[in-house]
Length: 243
Image 1 (cartoon, rainbow, N blue to C red):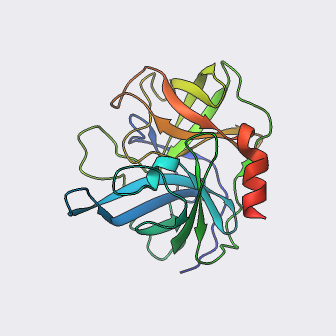
Image 2 (cartoon, helix red, strand yellow):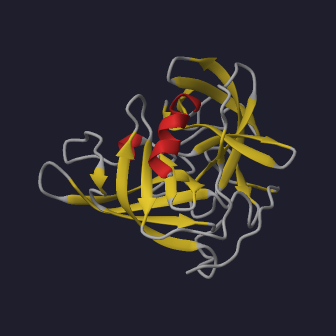
């Protein structure tokens, strides 16, 4: 399914969540990816379904959290996708089935230094502009946008049906990670379950650049520091994998 997507970045007024975020306006942030995983094996022989978030950073590659792809014991893995994974790209709401793309993720490559993975799509996407990587590291106090498909609250039964956005401020910068805290629309705007891998990006003058991806934090919503994985320190590795 392939429908051209605009690149509007406006945010609508109705509240929703990343947790305590906002509904993204239709067509906003088309590079934001919803990853749906099915039949994930459990140690007892049963299976389960799950979801993560991510971003299209190349016409055939999605960046997300490394822990989204793992073996039966929870260890991150590279190679063929370990379970059926569908990437939904260029769609703001699940109901808009005539928009965007649904493409299988067929291969995973794990970052050698932090909790980041690249997922190769079965076919390229040519009508969505990939999210650029920012070369500069994050800095304390700067504002970033978070766009994710995670749950809207800790007790929600599944990922959001509409792309959620919010703003955060960088709290501290570590060697491979950066922590962030909620800023807009609320101090407890925060990532939630299934937001793993969601992009945190700089948005200036209509230009977006990826700074980090969601790693983990306290139960949502919360106003405490949330941990994200920096992409500037692995930019060369990402370019090597995707060229």
